[in-house]
Amino acid sequence: MSEDEEDEAAEPIESQPSVIPRLINVALAPSLIRRSFAFNQAALQGDAGVRLGYQLALESFPLVTRPNGWYRTIGVGAVYEKEYGDATHNATGGMFNGYPFNQSRLGFDVRFAIPAGEWVIVMPAIGYGRVGADLQRSNPTTPTNCTAASAMDPCFGDVNASYLSVDVHIRMGLSPTLALSLAGGYLQGLGVTKGMDQITAEGNASMKGFHVEGGPTLFLSDWVALQANATFRRYGYAFTPTTGTSFTYRSAADMYYGVIAGLALFTK
Image (cartoon, rainbow, N blue to C red; front, side):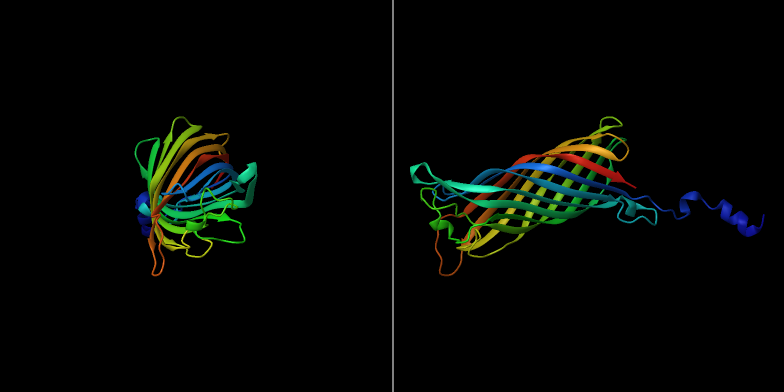
């Protein structure tokens, strides 16, 4: 054996570069979510309804496969969720009117995995997201003119807001085939879209909120699992009048809660 070959053989294994396999988790699941939106004044019309839709989620670890080191504990996550239904408003004489309605959520983040035991992983995450609610009504009106006692059609404003998310995910294995997950975090609004068809029709708005979700994962094989999550999200809006406007409401709460359950595929 030559001197070069002897030096190569003597080099510690951990100092040699290696490729870390990437684990990708893709989940597609039906969603059943109830929305409850209301201003801080009961006289103004809000929204309440259960809508059916879907959620598509992606998680990938590690973000960097080479070289070795703490880089391999960085991953990315993304989610898109949308539900469809309608919104109705009771009118006089027992009649009601309605319009199609949909609600959506989009988000992605960078997460850092920290082992907290043989079967537990804690993952702080920071990301960006958007939330939307769209009442497909052709003639928008201001919140002040959209009262709960009126005989008008549903007329509450749309929502389109962006935010920064700061979350913590916890994964706990109970057995080789069963695991539990819990996630939650703070949502700091970055902007709320203005427009005559929006909840901002009469003034500016800021947003902040939080969310929490959790549920089990049951592995049917090495690459297929059943996942179920109960979810709760709350967005709080604070309103300030602009020059030349005047209104009495100052806040609104927009809450979503329900169940998301479906299949997840794991690939390497």
